[in-house]
Length: 229
Image (cartoon, rainbow, N blue to C red; front, side, top):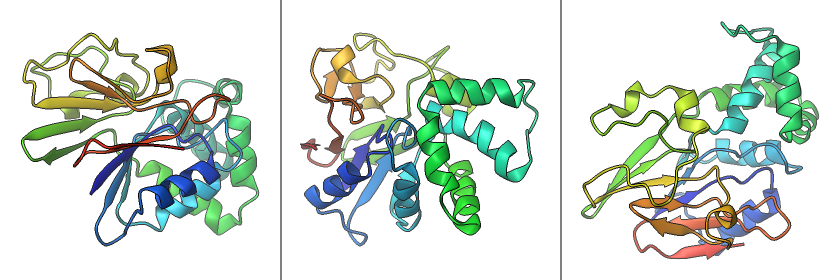
């Protein structure tokens, strides 16, 4: 079976309970996680270390991973890439968005684990696609900013993929066999409920796991069965 999850936000216990609920198997299943594994919850490092051990878990980058990497590369690798933004400003933005939990969680790990986590974060892909039966699913953290139907997926920058908030009623593709699955925006902000939202070829699966009345959601693409913790 092929499963999709998003926006775990450090909620390690919910993550483990979800794997138990879907009876996730290394031999028979695949899991795509659409970013925002880190920040806001207390145990992002534990989730990342678990994901790293599972060859059938495929992580996609979210805006919170992007913010984290901008700072962690400087703090622990001494690298700032080509960013024109001072690290102090990047740190301030990250901490404002719940990064303190991730910084604390990663700082408590051994040097080897910490560097392994940072390397693993750098391997997150920008998007993934999968075909099941006669349907095609494009999986991305947030959506496609500056979208054009004729634009190649590989032409979108990471910023265009992790920050955009798609309106549920706006369809990306005219082909009704193509679906875009995303997280980023909690569904209770879109439809008033913490449940997976299907509309106009869009599937929104961030159900606000880190919020008081939110849930961690998981969708099975083979059966369209929905799971909640």
